[in-house]
Image (cartoon, rainbow, N blue to C red; front, side, top):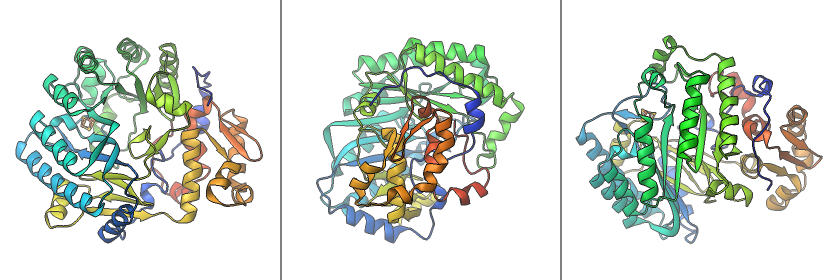
Length: 464
Ligand code: SF4
């Protein structure tokens, strides 16, 4: 796998390929799922998955709580400072862990675990130990497993990080977005550059193998000068891995985002300049594009996985462990088990009620068809291996007709090839280093639900 160094970027590409599109953390994507697919199917999938006892799992645990609401937030959160709500939620989580593990029988080994949110460090050290203990009682965390979580530097105390290190967590992901105080005031997220730096240094002293930082462009009051300062901070901190997200303004889904409309949201031209500025500065600082919106130093495990053809993609985004099955626990959490997707109830109230009444908590889901599996494989190849080779895919799937089966998709790739995003031959599509920034429109060529979804305008955020 050839690595992508700094890429020359023509801003006009954003106009052509920066439209709306899914992120393909699943295929078929969430809007295709149905509430008719629920607990009975969830149980059956877990029982089928139990037959592959030796295959490791990925675990995801959703901690929805935050102390205050950041106005750009796109996550499923519950804002609270009430300790009793957190305790009730942990009780339900413990029940769900036991119940799901019971259905998985002897299938208990875990190669990767991630706690997301919300703010997982909303939990006290004692609560972190309690939750970890409940998971470790039921599952066997394999030696070398990646244990990661999201932390909010403003609310995370040093002793919580010490607890996490003691338990074996080895990667932290820090939301930063922008270090400028004016931008932070506009989005109601307060976090000084100094406290972020101090937390990164503390994690490194405690031996965390990886530090990720999330940045966001397109936020109110951002301009080239403020963003230059943010990028300089990041270059100084030198996290191993970075995510650079475009702010998705979707007030019809997140009504509180409306408050940002009076706060000088960047227009599309400024968004483009901010994105280009980040590309250039991150390239100078030694980061290379991994795919979509991820950047990494060459020493980071994500970059190694890219070079060695081991990248995988699931609901956590890019992953270095290719576990096919991911068990996700907690409200709104999304599992991928034995060819099915399930999302738990999207509110803590409904989630806890379902779990306390003795069941599981699936609210909607989908079982993939053979055609879905074929297209999913093509999309994963493009997004993780940065190529789609029809000979390779035919070998893996036992099919002999993919040239004709994907003839229309190949035609859809031609304009992307003309713009230098894909190198196209009769049987192979190879994503160029520049094309790694446009993986969504490339993958969209293989999404047969897309026509119907495009009719539902506004379902997805910008592709870049
Ligand atoms: S800390 Fe993260 S999850 Fe919580 S409100 Fe802010 S952006 Fe959303």
